Amino acid sequence: MDGFSAQHEIVDLDRQLPVLFNIYQKCHYMATHWHEYVEIVFQISGGMAAVVQGGFYELSPGDLLIVNENELHRTKSLSGQAPYILIQIPVQYLREIIPSFDTVRFQNYIPARELSAAAPLGDALLRMREAFREKEDGWTLRFLEGLYGMLYLLYKDFSCRMKPDCRQEGGRDLQRMIDLMGWIQSNYQRKLTLMDAADYLCVSKEHFCRIFRKYTGQTFLKYLNCFRAARLYEDLYSSDASLASIMEKNGITNYKVFSRTFREMYGKTPRQARYGMRCEEKNVDS
Image (cartoon, rainbow, N blue to C red; front, side, top):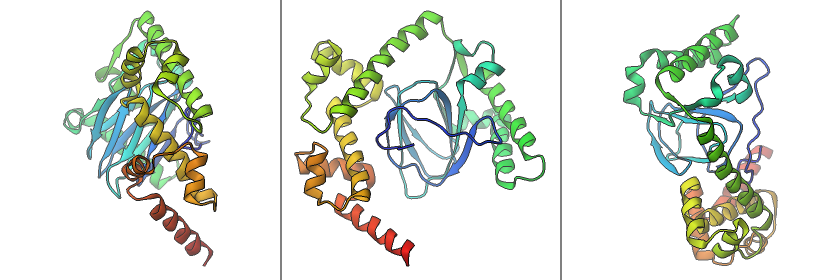
């Protein structure tokens, strides 16, 4: 999956497990996206910034983040090394083990103090991590024991039930944002204005600004600048073209604004990023 440009994330599952489970050392910038999975992030150390459906969360060690099915979200580590556990659970699997799943909405953010009060939940996460790391005989059974224990406690203590009409209303709003992001992905290389985007959804500029910030936590211009910067980052790695040419290709006309956005996302300038990429390639070849 192309984490920078993709809007809808497709998850490849571990063949031995019904879920995706992994431990990552750092979360690079992920543009706003969604998927038909429930995503669980457990911060081991360091920190991570996350926006889910317009709500901002800053994860510290021991915090848990849950992204429900089709919720727009983006994430980024706040330090050089910020290891975290990532679990992605297919909705169809959850429907099979939780008959009322379509009315369930998990709490997005569970701080460490609440998680420690529910000690068995933290224990279940540790069992899954140990089973996954050690992979001793029967490890999948041990892993599934932890998974079921975690899901039971999340369902019992950290979820609420929604009325079907509320879910449908939210689905309509989400679909509008999905359609808009598809439009941005197809047109970002040309000049786009706030009015263009509002006209695409057939709403007033004021109404557009409200719903866009509600679902993304960003202004339209900030989102567009981040999207373009992410595409340029890919091109720096895959193309030998000049920075000026790559900027023009990605619809970037204001270098000062773009450079500030790029540094916020990647912690370095575009030239520094390209130099680092080339050094990595030389080290791999040598």
